[in-house]
Amino acid sequence: MTKTMWLAAKDLRIEMRARDTLAPMLGFAATVALVLAFALPEASSAGDDVVSYVQAGFMWVTVLFAGLIGFGRTFEVERAEGALDSLLLVPVDRSALFVSKALSNLAFIVVLETVLLPLSALLFAYDLGGSWGALVAVVALVDVGFVAVGTLYAALAAQTRSRELLLPLLALPALIPVFIAALELTADLLLGAGFDALAARGWFGILVAFDVVFVTAGAVLFDAVLD
Amino acid sequence: MATASELRPRPAGLDALGAAAVASVAAALLLVFFVAREADVTMGGQLQRIFYFHVPSAWIAYLSFAIVFLASIAYLRTGAGRWDLLAHAAAEIGIVFTTLVLITGPIWARPVWGTWWQWDARLTSTLVLWLTYIGYLFLRSLASDEATVGRLAAVVGIVGFLDVPIVHFSVQWWRTLHPSGPTVANPTTGSGLGTPELTAFFASLLAFTLLFCWLLSLRLRIGRLAQRVELEEIERAAAETR
Image (cartoon, rainbow over all chains, first blue to last red; front, top):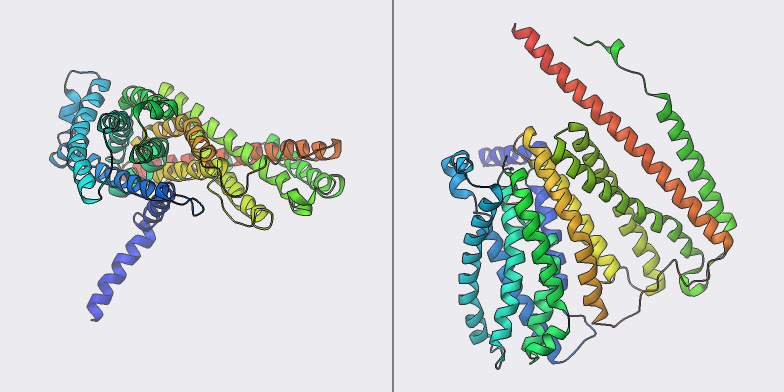
């Protein structure tokens, strides 16, 4: 028993000195709380609205976290096998490398959503009516921004200690606009709004702006991340 | 090898800046508490005076993060360490003032709105801002080696700042579409601020700005001294192995 305590004390002492785990954990917790605050409707609103909101919230929180776990592995193969230098020697522009990594991440997230969305619809009895097409448009716009930020920050976090904690800590606050837009649009769809009503609300504008800004930023800044 | 005598003394300009900052803070305090009149009870009466600290803190926070943004771009373009140091210093000070904003806001809100916190556009985007730069500092402390810290931090300094207007806009929209609970009155406009109040406000703004310049200069000096100490230690170690 004493030995066990000694070993535990050793771990705590290491953490006291390096502070690599606890502090990012607290930061991570704060960002998760922030995301969940958006996923919950206000206490004062009532009716169908609440259910649609919570359903949309659950769905997008799931996509967000599953996505970030996947993105965290963007450079895992290269890192583990020490092949990052070789990859950087491939005679392409760094922005092309960014796009290639983003595309593979996009493929992962699309497969994930293709499984998750119909399954959720089945399990939680979503009533989408004929709005599946509109949902696909929303998902596509969300995915582009999500993948752009996720890939850029994954490349960045891969070069740090505690990268599993740092990626969500950095990415979640940045993704708030995408998350809100996704939530609003999906909740509307679940409430039976058509594509025209959706487009009229202007959230597509925010999604497009976010996508353009962060795809550009990722392509331009990837060079600085992988030097 | 450099000795202690070679260390430059604290520049006189820094002390003068410090004196100016302290004097202007004192003057601002007098104006805020004795010249500005008590606000309407709907704005919290005496409590409204917290805005003379709250709003300038927010201004300094935005100023700091704008400096982080510009210094990060300059660092990526030139690779000069002084830009990285400037970005780091400004981010630390920006977090301190954002924290002040997040503390002084609820102190006022609790008695006046009846709640510590509201998921209102301004509050929420300030919280997002705070978390973004907390992440920035974590990244700085967790980067695997010294050479990469500056590059990676610069990327977050740029991306984080680009996100600020989008976050603010989206959160504002989100709230506007769900109006409920008490509405958030803008504390600085439309509340019948007269000349005494405006004088106190701008004096406070000036005092905070001078304080910021002083803090930033001190932080930059600490950074430069830290770099020198590190350099000297390396030189000493190199001399010993010879």
